[in-house]
Length: 167
Image (tube, rainbow, N blue to C red; front, side, top):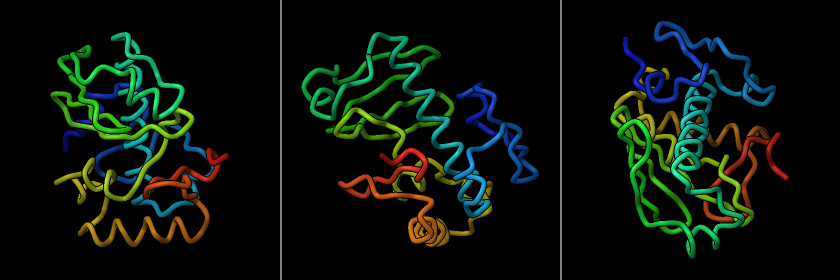
């Protein structure tokens, strides 16, 4: 089965479509997480990293804060590889021919955050590729990772960090 994000990211994080194993080493926090959620989070965060790289190549620099993004980032634009971006509030959606990624910036400009809604949106009809039968299963796995401390609340909205990135 074709993994569309591999075309989009081309960043060395690869998942065999027939297993849940990743060929790139995962952080210690991801390695303890529910296997299905771990795969989805890793692919989502790889997509966010690629989106930031594309934005920076286009001259749209990482903001110093969410207010910097709101006040100074362009509303939209074209990116390498046929991708485009659209600013929304404190966040951004990058649309590429191979898929979309949506993320927000934090009070200090951080962007390696996630919430269950964005994970579900990102996976879309590919939930089954990550081993989830429904959105409810994603929510349950996400809540379990919050309860176990693998995901930490960012302090606003419904955004979370991997515990190792929470400061």
